[in-house]
Image (tube, rainbow, N blue to C red):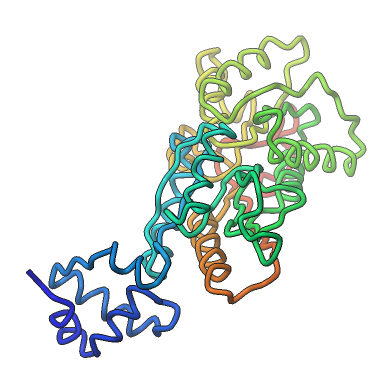
Length: 342
């Protein structure tokens, strides 16, 4: 069985440096830590985690609260978290909470009972019943993706309102005057922010907002499919559909095809997120790209910085977005004279 001395010899460092890499990774340079990690992998060394925890007072474990692991965007976020956590010497404990506050509070208690060091929350809810920092310092938490409007902790978010306005303007520039919006869950801040962006773009184009063009959804394939069937039955069928996430858009595309309509010749459709399947739809989906992996990496790095005392205020990090134009959007019927590149 490999020992810590074997790791130190292979990495070309002292035993103390190996120990610091495991217990206090923030005190070791990334280059040195990378050599130590490589040596651990090559030797198969397995440190006594109970002893590490006893000596450092830290578990080097982070709890990630995910509303649903079935969501493909969240899967990419978690992938980014795993990469960053490994680089910082932490492991992740994944909690599939289904958005249940009681489940989230139970995971948060792992921090309060020293079973984990901090929490990354991916929805707009504070799982801590009481402030475990006893009124001083930051909560050992980062809120990412769907964030609280007023947060006591660092947040990582997107300008969802501006992103939705950008997509809506793209459709307006193609001559679409009646644009349906399939929303996300009613209580989600993302739903409200993207709705606001949609309304902003309509107002800027001097087009009256029509509540009849709003359709409920929940960010799932099934919701997109059902909402699209309602849209197609509308007495004044919209010429374009903007979905608040890609899974909704893919479900809507299926209903449109089943109705015998062509995308985008008969009706354009757009999504939000740029999940991996978006580029492989038929036709490929126009969408808003979010840097999902960077969301996860940033959240982990912020939390570790909180835990190691590197930051004392709660920063708000706004990630960039990009309009990805593919073949699911085109000129509105009767507006084929518009420049396809608009």
